[in-house]
Amino acid sequence: MMEFFNALRNREEGQALVEYGLILALVSVACVATLGALGTGVDGILNQIVTAL
Image 1: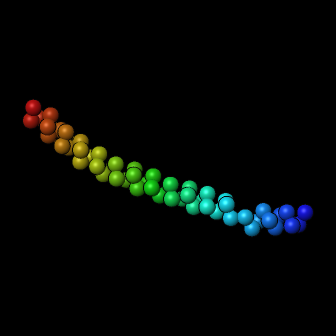
Image 2 (image 1 turned 60 degrees about the vertical axis):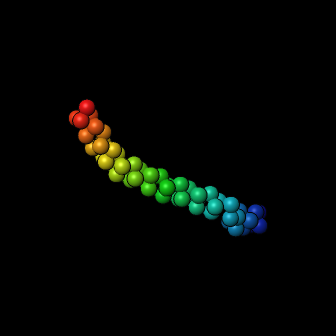
Image 3 (image 1 turned 180 degrees about the vertical axis):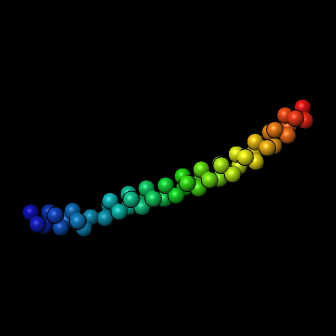
């Protein structure tokens, strides 16, 4: 029984999954920040186009 718990503790597959999750979270935060910054700029440009028409 002790060997079984030691084998579970020494597995590394779960670590890779956590790392992929952290990378996905970082990319998501970067995308939200970028879209937030671009959104206000695009809104201003579209408003200028509408007033010009």
